[in-house]
Length: 196
Image 1 (cartoon, rainbow, N blue to C red):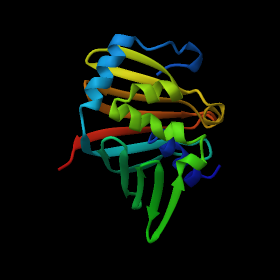
Image 2: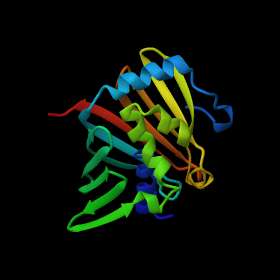
Image 3: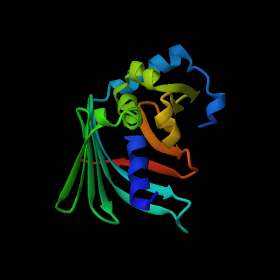
């Protein structure tokens, strides 16, 4: 898989988007419900991000940075500013990618193996527990105010791409999104300061 395609798959997984799959146990129901309420209360966000991708085919990690925007319940936008401008937008089940003057659009319904992976971050931000549990085996590692959701795709086709998505945060703030791909590659997106 080339680097651009791998990077796209990694981001899809987090829009894409801690612990081995086999050990995943149901999340504590009361604490998961409380966390989903806290997360769902936030209706929008605009934050800086940095992302590091570790790919077996490269000698060193790929690094990028930019800003993320969220509007409840289902609009995510990732604006990469460095090393080269690129914008990815997920809205109403459609993913579009723009680089320079070229835009590509993807209807997620046509790619069911990718839809759950994209849905992981959206459902987490929206506090949509039902969607998370429909698409993933969910494990909550909780040490308030810090928490980590370990999401293992239930769909076999999705699991062939991504082994697990780990979304970590503190109270109602998502801090990191780590994508562990089935081929051993991984990416870590770190969410930084709020932007105006």
